[in-house]
Amino acid sequence: MSQRIILASGSQSRRAVLTAAGIEADTIKPNVDEDAAKASFRASDMKVRDQAMQLAELKSVKISMREPGLVIGCDQMLSLDGEAFDKPVDLADARNHLVKLSGKAHTLETAIVISEEGKPVWRHLARPKLTVRSLSDAFIDTYVEAVGESLLSTVGAYQLEGLGAQLFTRIDGDYFSILGLPLLPLLDYLRTRGVLLS
Image (cartoon, rainbow, N blue to C red; front, side):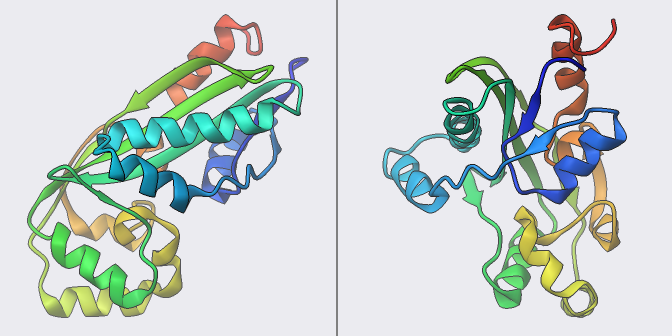
C-alpha cells in the first residue's frame, strides 16, 4: 500500500480487525473530549446515530489536519429505544446495562469516517441489531464476575467474541460492524482509491 493509512483510535480490537484484513495502519489516538462532545449533542437532542457519526468525524478530521494520508475515525454507540448507552463506568454500571438490555433488541450505531487533508471524504453508518435474551439475575452476576473489568471497554458491557455470545437470541448485521469497524464497506472504498487491488 503506497497510500498511508491512519487509524484515529486507541482501540485494540479495531486495529486487530484491520491487521487481520491485511491493512497496515498507523495508530494515533485523537484525544477528542468525547464527554464534552456527547453532552453538547445530547443537549440538542441529536439522534444517537448522528452522535456516533459526529464523533467519528471529529476523530478523523482532528488527526487528518496534521497528518498526511487517509485517516479512519470510528465511533460506536448503543441505542435502546432512542437512549444512548456509553461504556459502563464500573462493574455495577455494567450490571445495570445488562438489566436494561435483558429481553430487548438494541442497535449498535457504528460510524466510520475517512478524512484527508482535514476534510471528510467518505462516511458509512452500519446499524446491526442485537436481541438479548431474558437474563436471570444469577446469570448476570456470574457473567459480570467471570468477565470482569473488560466489560468496561465496550458499550453494552459485552464482547461478542467471548462470553458475551451467551447474551443473545438473534443478531442482524455483520460481525465486523458489531466489533466497531464496518470492514467490508471500508475495504470497498479503499479499492476505489487504489489502496487495495480490485
